[in-house]
Image (tube, rainbow, N blue to C red; front, side):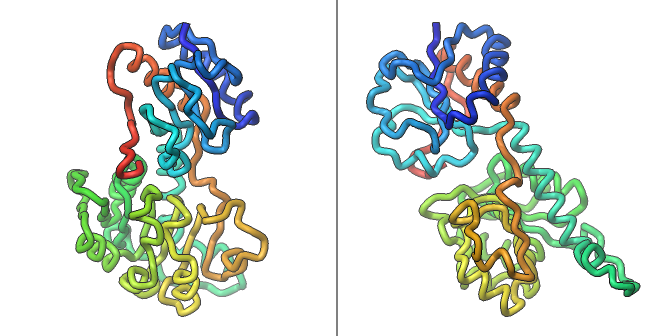
Length: 309
């Protein structure tokens, strides 16, 4: 019998209990899944950072922690966590992110706001450029960033991507390092942020780097709020150097009432809905990973503690 602890908020239990049971059965795993196992008897932990576990020390038998969310910045610095940590890479989450990013890139590329908001009797002529004449840059080429880059390239956009280390996405141009970052920023008519949050990426988009973007560029951030220096972005928006910012993530969530982003005419706020973990597909990811561990194989999507993701 494999004892799996569900260490996430109680509100998630009802959504995940059924899909997890089905996924464990499909993988032919004999699992006792509960929210209240004796810590000394837990073999695997399904974890969310806003769940009940803060101290991992009592979980002396636990072989791995399996994150429910894609982001791991809330756990990587925990000094009591000494065992392997796997982040969530879920096909449902990836597909949702691709749809959200493509939707908002197309919205800004086509200039849809002028027609949706501007139905005042004015006949506005002028077609947008075609996608291959629009330069889109993506910061972050992990699973989500790479999937969005491929989808946008498939729509015809001129896509380039940047990552901290070398990546090969075939026909999509990729760059890395500080010089590569400057290159992708200077070309970006639409910039998409899909980097993980680490000490190296916090406030990455500061005033100096925002100034590298072409005047009137659009910023789309479904990654992490603290990737952006908020004061620098608001100043760039006020001055018209940044044409628009569509923001799905923020330093404080929910975004507080009265925050300047809410009322800014060049900002679109969406409430952290770019994508989310879907219980059915996430349960399959977790069950497959436990099956791998039980068979002596390395877990998929292991977190590198030094890099922070």
